[in-house]
Image (cartoon, rainbow, N blue to C red; front, side, top):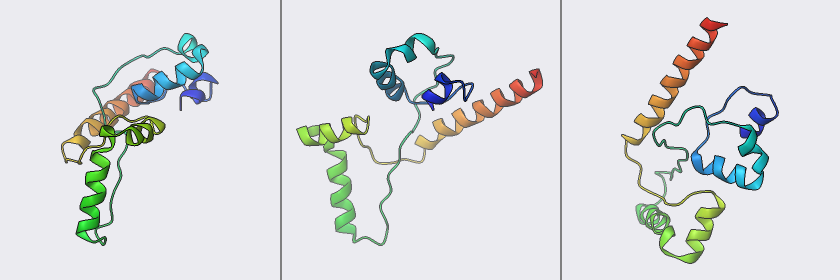
Length: 116
């Protein structure tokens, strides 16, 4: 998404701050050329799901292992590879921040269309 904006294929994009930081570290020209126009409250940008058909003991083991990734060196490397820093159990309230971001984006699109 960031590169689409950089190359003029999109006017703007929404990305996590970690993603933008990584992109600008890899290509400093991005940071010099692109401008953050608005920062949102933190939002959920990844979700992993486990099949309920899996045996409960296996699901619990997988979740416990995932949540504890930051506490061991290989786990930290794995999280870094995917630009993450922790794994937490999902709560319904986490989706609210994403809904708010989407609703704000819809309003911005409407305002942009009216101005054109």
